Amino acid sequence: MTDRLRIAMAQLNPKVGALRANLELARGALDDAVAARTDLLMLSELFLTGYFPEDLLFKPQFITDAIAAAHDLAAATRDTGVTLVLPTVWYEHGALRNAVVVAENGEIVATRLKRELPNDDVFYERRYFIPGPLPEPVTVKGVPIGIPICEDIWHPWVCAHLVRKGAEILLCPNGSPYWRNKQHIRKDLVRARLAEDGVPMLYLNQVGGQDELVFDGASFAMEPDGRLVAQGKSFETDFIVSDWALTEDGWRCVEGRVEERTSIDETPWRACVLGLRDYVHKSGFRQVVLGLSGGIDSAVVAAMAVDAFGPDNVHAIMLPYRYTSQASRTDAEDCAERLGIRYDVVSIGEPVDAALHELTPIFGNRPLDIAEENIQSRMRGLVLMAVSNKLGSMLLTTGNKSEMAVGYATIYGDMNGGFNPLKDLLKMQVYHLARWRNANKPDGCLGPSGEIIPISIIDKAPSAELRPDQTDQDSLPPYPVLDAVLEAMVEQELSVAEIVAKGHDRALVKHIEKLVNIAEYKRRQSAPGVKLTPKAFGIGRKYPITNGYRDESGS
Image (cartoon, rainbow, N blue to C red):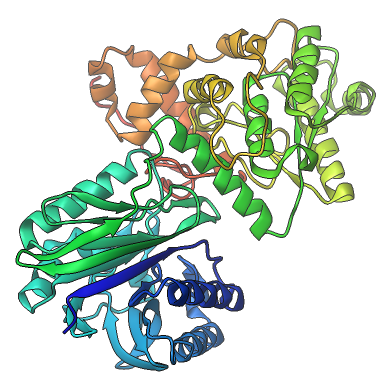
């Protein structure tokens, strides 16, 4: 039995379904492990398939190919001296499993199965997998090592069983998506397990965007007293090597790199940029286009896009109508210049007026209302989609969570687009991020430093500008009030009575509840966007479209 171990955690960015590409990433990590003279290399959960493959797991050929890729990678360990911990899909006892295979010298020497399968939030693993028994330790270089897989560490009996059976170190591969405060939650969880079990744990998380989800990496290692001894980068790929020695008190880290943790203000921006970049690139696009209105939402999306792709790959279009103010035109052009992006102006005046003229026989003498207003929005959506089709750029949509919650968006109009970076950000959070980005440029972002979003955009009253002198507050409560009610209603699932008890007017709360309920059909048809909270519309909050329930509490 050795008394020294060098362990590598490969914090990488796999793509769901890309078996060959993921296999090459893993081979590269194995080469890095050999070069670093490590004893053990760990990859993240279901690495070769990408996490999470969803109903690809019902496709027999996909499973066959994934298992074949795992055998290929295991064979690549021959003559390397590296023991590979590879999380993968596996068949055992005739059932599909979320598993880990351990390979060394070209052979698979052990398999372990995930015991606790998550069945809430965004992952429904019981739809696909059969849980395994309580796992036993695996012997690596003579050292008994426990390998709880992701959800397993949320249930104390799994780690307790491994340690009771002799595990001296715990290695935990994960596919843990980001949401606000998630890094603190993970560390508190690991500290709780270590306080109970008294052995160190290395926690590996993947990184990258996958559809709506963003995996933030931030892998780490911790000793039993809760001391952080290794910390990987956040929102970036990383290769984290730590050295361990057997002491009188058990295994302890003698050398590990600790990266500075991303601040709580920076993480939403980094998550949106990474989620946007990976969604666009993994979908096969290289450039994006968006409507730049002179308002806060489109300005923030433009800034995120420049940080994700660089100025040369972002195209902004102003689409004015007779109600578009000169201030909005000036602000949009100013923002585009600060960001260094292509900026075009395409007037929608003639096509909108032509549509209104052709509709006169049908509309008759009915008074002007939202129907005419929405023609403007839908004409903008038509033009932007035409540019997307012709130039091959993905169209970004720019609605925030507050607007999406209450239906303050035009379906087939400003909701057009392939992806929405702001979908899980309330309006006041968008303002906060705009101010934060003006004062900070995060690592890895490709946009310019300094005040890239004009203060005039941040300071002016928000407006859709679909009629003269319109502001959002004509039909909505002030955004600080609206956001507070939505935070309670959507994020916390509080009742009407509980929200009223927080000091909000009951009639207002009921009105917002009604708007949230009737807008579900719009949200169901909206573009995907980065998930930043547990209750993101679509992937974290799944309500029926036709829904007769109304909360009458507190009446």
